[in-house]
Length: 469
Image (cartoon, rainbow, N blue to C red; front, side, top):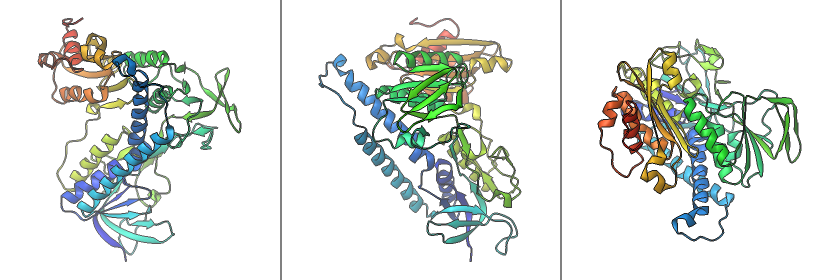
């Protein structure tokens, strides 16, 4: 006999478990189905473990440079095995926290692979979920409302499939106990730039390969140029406007000869970071009227599929593939289920972050996108090297850039490359939410010394009136 729940969520990542908690808080009976571990890609194979290793790399570099601050440490070495232990302990602690939240909310967790069934004796409409555990045993769950939050997986490079030894995805690199001496990273987007930044800090010889004409192609062009300049300054070899020829690439037992344009580059291994693919295969979607295009589940502004009682959120719907976006979508979907008629999520107001050195963060329109949208644009930029706090931190590279409409003075976008950018961006995001102008941002008295002073100066620079420039 199928067990019934008000809301069933397939997928225990940041979209799925947040949706489950939101529904449970409203008094709904809730179940969550997860084939692996609660926390999903973000906790186990993405956001948290990569940032943990980025922190380890940053501490290593700080220790190497400690004599600048009068701290004598002697020879400094990096122990990857211990860094991995730090990472695993951190992830395990956060996973226990999510498990506690499930118990606290009386959310029942089913461990196994979910399949959506068509109409049956249990329900005249599709949506009954079959859960198959590791032993092959199956259990049926009957949801009144179903939320699909199955996430995504790394995309392979055509003709160069992952062998998880020499041709790697980011999941593979996260579990390395020893570092390679050299690596080629294919893809200059967020994942590629973060790994390039981390590995060069750990003394790995890094070549970053991008098919386009710039790194971080979705960011403001000025940000892309600054990131490339600073990566090169730290020793990363950057190759742009070139493609990898899979047919000429040779994979050996202990090395790879990768064909990059006309060049053959020999490295220990290759990281492929060319995006992610929605995880919608073998889910049973063919048993429903749900529309899938190019592997992406199609939803309306409230995340409802063609089946009125089935919703989809997170990476599997192909919008911004970010953990905080999935969580926000999960909340909106549950609010719709509760009949609250939530305001649709405005993706233009969602911060985008890159946790490299220096960090990158942005919200709203780039200067190029603003012009394409028909705005007469004015900008203000202030470099961190003008700030005492940035110099104290030893991270004076980068800048804050504001993009405004010349006619209305409305703020259109905020772009940061520099220290603590992923923390500072919240001020810019709030300014956009409140429809502020650059002038209004400039009227806020910022503390001194502080990195956030760059906002005030950039805001004043929009009208050509910065104080410390």
